[in-house]
Length: 449
Image (cartoon, rainbow, N blue to C red; front, side, top):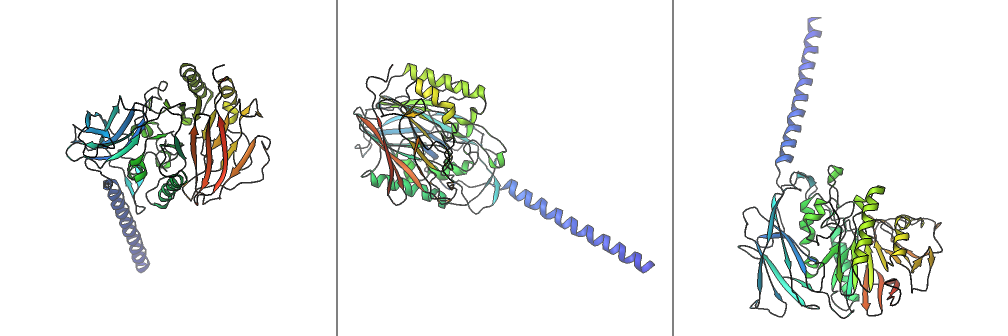
């Protein structure tokens, strides 16, 4: 009996020792994760996360957003016409700066798939460049002690002739860099099909896998295509979330951009509108339209914007799909079609579903000859990883003209080319194949009825 008692005591001691070792290991891992400070690999001089956005009138105002470390309290933007290669005529604008802690401590992933908490306390810097020349190419650089490399943008022209790339659902995710590479290569394909560069870029949301991961934004904004263009965009559900939906807020999107502050209450700099030459763009945030109250606020704002701003074309952009591309069923088309009919919206752009869907001009749920009605189009995914498969086409076969996807590995985007008579949109795949196209006609005598 004493021998049995000895072995039982020894077994209990051994189990306790194993448990203690496991607890020690877990605590060690936890501490290493908590204390891990993800290094910013994408500094450009003193600055990072540099991007140019349209002002309310993109003919003469462009807004610049960047981030810098806490000690750089006198950051500025220097800009000049692109032909001024020696910067002899450059002007300097001091940045408005504010401490941003929105991303600090967010649970994230690094480039090797390691877990860490974002170490992201920085100064958010913004400038508004005013009095610019329409239809002109500019360059700019930002910083304080060490300025960034030159970045570029074009102002909107007065001619009615311009081009725009439309891309969506990039899902930038540091452990899987091929997603971002696929999307950037797709922009290069659009450029080639346009005979060179486009005039500006539009993204339709979900450009980041988790908008709360500041390192994802800095990785994406360091890509050359973000240094070449003015970028307009909308807040997607992924851009609005942190890992595991730990926190959802439009602040992620707001603080990595500097869009016009002309949105409705709570949505300033997230919902916004701007004119680009002869087109009025109205940019929406689906994440604050999930209930009827939120939808009503957004719709009243859209009505007010259209009423108070004249343009040849009215373009509304949101992230969530108009139709479910899998089988063609209604989605947000049903929420917006009556307003679009009443207020003569010409083009409605969305994404999210990862399947390209396009109609001809619709009015009263019927296809028209294009002299009245709204063309609905939704961009496919571009990350070569998170696409969707189509099923049997059972709904809206009378109004949907084309659907397209490559399944899970989809890469596609849309090129819009304009002239004084129409907007022309072309869907391209990664190889530069023209898969579908549609024109949005200028509605001379019906626009302001």
